[in-house]
Length: 226
Length: 119
Image (cartoon, each protein chain N blue to C red):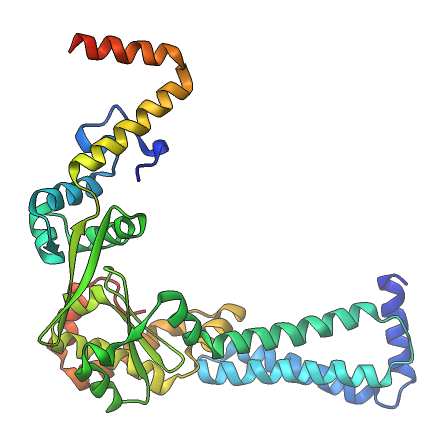
């Protein structure tokens, strides 16, 4: 059966079914949610509406399956499989992304060499600090882990390092789903929210470690904060 | 150690075989032995932003080795050349001679002996 045949059959089945209004309702809802997620400014609202839109369309597909009398809806089967597999993959990979990073970077707990750093972060958020082997000064947060390179540790003094750790801790505390957000920002073509997040993380870092420490840390490395 | 496709005989000195930053770092390490990152940036006069990535590459490629030192809660890298200057020179010379023999066969060998006779 070709695609146009499938679509005709699909339309006919819908017309004959009692549940057609329900499916139509779900389609309208998911389109409205998707439009809202594109228009909303705040990343969190964007995220919620986008996920809801996905769920509504998924429900719509499931409902369609129930009312289908046609066989050979191969295209729909394939699409559903794609949706399920990609959703599982994206969420599973992002959930365990820090585990992957630990292995890939061969990162080690920073508590073993700089106990104060882990203690300092413990006071802010429940996260583990890791260091990894690279001379390039870098720091980033993923999942419930903060990664700093040895290059960063040797470049910054303790106050500056506190500013960096506080910045990353803010990301974890306020946005443990940062990778999800980034992924969704990619999917919804909205990368503009990132600079605001960085700005707020910086304000938090300045509160905790002082403006001077944050400023000098920023000065020492052009691209420390990711 | 040295990749032949990176050799550029029209360049000066070590930059025939290494990038300018790699060459400065290796020269510094060969003359001073063990060095910290700040000593390296001081000696080569190249900013850390340029040196850091190159150091990672040199370590990965096996030209230099480094270890992490932990003194009074501060950590730092200490770098060491993985090969002496003589070992590097031998390696580079052998590779180039091999490739010449590979390309020109007996003709290359003939020229080698002519060259050493001349000296």
